[in-house]
Length: 127
Picture 1 (tube, rainbow, N blue to C red):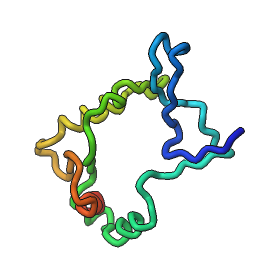
Picture 2: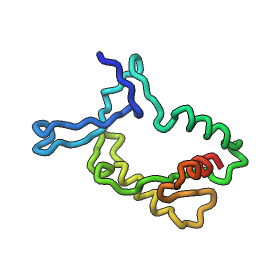
Picture 3: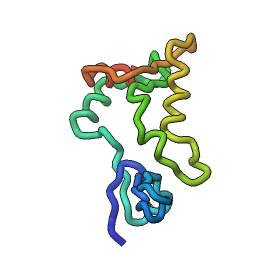
Picture 4: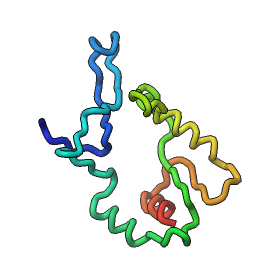
């Protein structure tokens, strides 16, 4: 019972070729994480980032955006990685759905590629 420090409760694991039917396959492990002994560490929350987000944060009702996604839209791993039901939507499918909203006239959405410098990203997601 090794203790896991992971950035999500269902971390990726590689299923060996012998079990995957020929090719090693990435999948989300739905039974690897045990809340009684393991810890989920949120990604991108180093001390400097945390201080930036807290300093920039606005009250919810004063924010310009209610939904922000600024990141990658395509990567082979996003579509190759599978999980057991009910988690059957791939990361690629979720990102493709978000991409359909780019340029839409829906209010309070900010969706697009990575914002640079990273400070611009922090300003957007806290506004």
